[in-house]
Image (cartoon, rainbow, N blue to C red):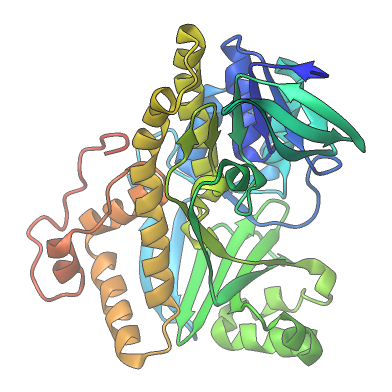
Length: 424
């Protein structure tokens, strides 16, 4: 072998890098391979939900984020296309101190995580490193064949972790069955300027319309606009002015913000898909994050769930390390513990996008009715918010809740915010 380590992690995204940090803090040797040439750059809108804030706090990283790179947001207003308010969600309902969403400057969280990984394990991160295949002795995985900066290397490892995204090469090499679903709609992200400080998020829904506006640091605003997955070329052909006018029709009160959109370099395109791997583990190998359970970014939990995976998997790998047992049986508790929450969030995101983006006027009326009911029902608000914030594993609405949200049944508990139980 050219290199050896105990845990080999393929992918230095939010999940893989956090796993490297967590293992290093436990004294478990690890090496993280990342095919990119360096830390990520470019535009991306990012919301750090309360569970992500809590996780970074526990790692000692939340305070390392400079205050000027984040914008705390308390209120999320949901409005009909055109401007009529439907519902306001108040993060203040969540337990302190993590009772705000943090809208982040692009890539700052990831860069902070990578800096910590380098500090915890100075030689534990390799850029320009590509996974090629497993190395085996008989049927046992004993490492990987990789390429680092153009040079072929063999790396011995006790266990290989695939944190390499929805089109995971590690998952493919493991032979794990997985369903990959591409959504018909994707997102256009735009970085806009606000003439005055904007402090509250606004989310517009209509017939096949979703437009979110999120206040960011330095009087910036992120726009998140749902578009057909094959429509980007047509949008650009129609021009900047045409798109500005569409946005002004949806959110006329924000016209001055849309006027700051003058060039396509202010935008980034986010394709959307969902991954469901049938199982996440086998002897001496495991997948996590988007490689196991990629979800629609509408859930606002993709990075958060990858980081949650990392912390959960680090604890399981610590047990494996102590027992020197890297079998599927020893790794399976990771999947057992994590699958319920990610499955619930995948389903929640799919359901929300279906109703919020519907072109069916009857479903649109039902959607608006649910929003208006929730506006005066703090119990239902809290249940949805605690799921979005990553603080529960079970679905926010049961069947009785759905009838009450639709206004078909009264809710005698409408004013009662449940006593918070983490990950209930």
